[in-house]
Length: 233
Image (cartoon, rainbow, N blue to C red; front, side, top):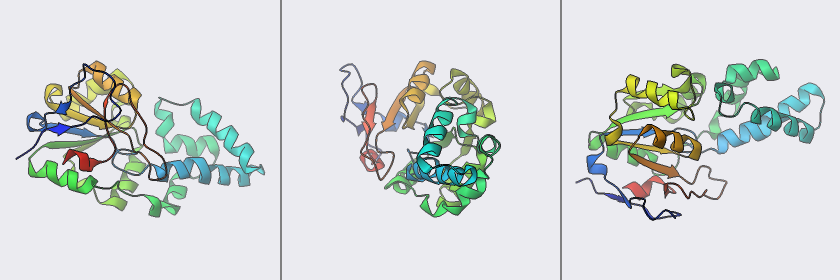
């Protein structure tokens, strides 16, 4: 029997429901990076490898390259460019897909994810991967982790023309995936995304606090919080 999920960590809003009624959930929408997969790969890639290669190419110090790149990254936050590896290849004059291939051994699934996905399958939930990641990145990561077989469908922000932080993403996502937002659970590690999903009317929302195996869990004052997927089983 599917049990109700009880989550209490870091929740400060008294009016927030204390359980996710999984037995009433028919659709589960899941973010990829930081939620299902260890964000260490992305943090290392954009925070170390790309600055290192950019510094070599432009005869700069690593520190100067990192400072410049982080300002450049920031200027494209919450846009499709943020996750568009073809855009970054042109912008930085680096072959971003090739560099990602070089460290694909760092791509890892978070603990208990596979068991959680198997549980959802067992209880006949519709499972959708919804991600801002570029389709080339999605392909690389699904091939490495072999978790693609658990999803009924995969939807990238590039398929709809908007990142998940924009309400337009959710209008188009509902049409494409045909989920019922009153019977949907969405789990993400980014509060801005969850706030937009809440505005759109997704009924059940969870914040994934532990995004990286190398970092402490984040906190949320706005959403029910889980550290790992074992809490949902």
